[in-house]
Amino acid sequence: MRAAEAAADRGWRLRHLPVLLIASAVLAALAAVVGGVTRGADGALGAAAGVAVTAFSYTLTTVVLAWADARDPQLVLPFGLGLYIAKMTLLGGVMVLVGATGWSGLIPFCLGIAAGVLIWTGVHIWWLATVHARRVHN
Image (cartoon, rainbow, N blue to C red; front, side):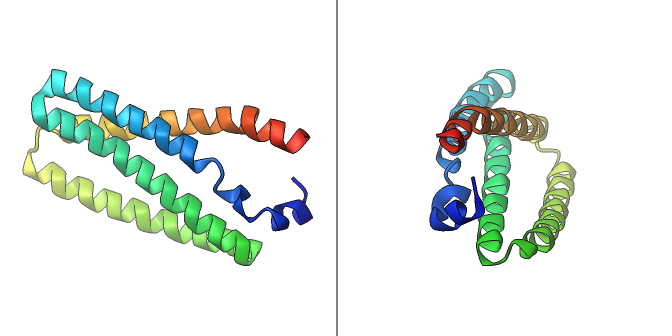
């Protein structure tokens, strides 16, 4: 997409979010079932929460970077790095605190995060390679 077209189409930065959020919701439901079958209620909650944390994290990053890019593309790097540091610090702190409780949903939570990353990344690649590619070439 050319710069002038991108400026005229203000929604292009967030257009992929609905597809990714739907994929994450489906994954969270499946993760809850698998977590519930393997580890009970704590497993179901942990697995679904892990997927939700990933979806929230990526959505927050997308929205903040779209906002920064719309204001000035030079803001993308400092906002992206700052947000990444803040998110990883917060996630690390939460993991340490939750790990100290001995909660049985911790492993499903971690697996939910990993599955969320894989699905989000895979669906995003699919969206870029198919939906977005068609839009750009037309």
